[in-house]
Length: 210
Ligand SMILES: O=C(O)CCC(=O)C(=O)O
Ligand SMILES: [Fe+2]
Image (cartoon, rainbow, N blue to C red; front, side, top):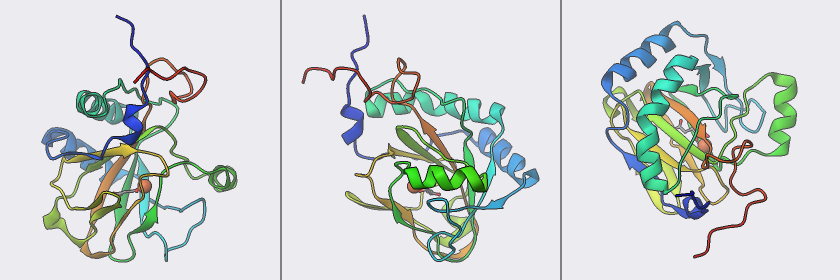
């Protein structure tokens, strides 16, 4: 049976999965990150530690595939649409030490960010759905909740937990200031359709009848 494209995923509430990836993959990701180069991360292409204080490192292709394999079925189930990797862009790990965290923002890529990224070499992470995977449990840091404005949520889940939500302007979120310790998450963006090479199901395709 042919898949009927549907944009219902755009209004789905955030997906919260406590056992998103297994502990072996958490361990391998953590080991990979110990050896990786971490760089300061920008917000909208600018480095401003009053708005965001974190470093980033890229995840290897192998680990990213493994992570995607583990989260794909739950994403499909929650958002009601097939999802696929965007092979041209890497998953990124963020490491937040004590300080600001990340102010409220949405994940839609802006032209200003693309433009600045061209000169700074910072990765632009585009896509339909943002997938956040926790490599630190709540015992590793204080503060640092991932918050959403609507619906209002404050999340400090277990190591291995996965939260996912549409990367659109409607899903405003941020990271509360980290009070102590270190908080590490991996961010992956996925495309919400198998059919479209651009990674969006909103371009040139009729929407499904309600
Ligand atoms: O690290 C997190 O939990 C969220 C990061 C985030 O919102 C982003 O990278 O856009
Ligand atoms: Fe975000």
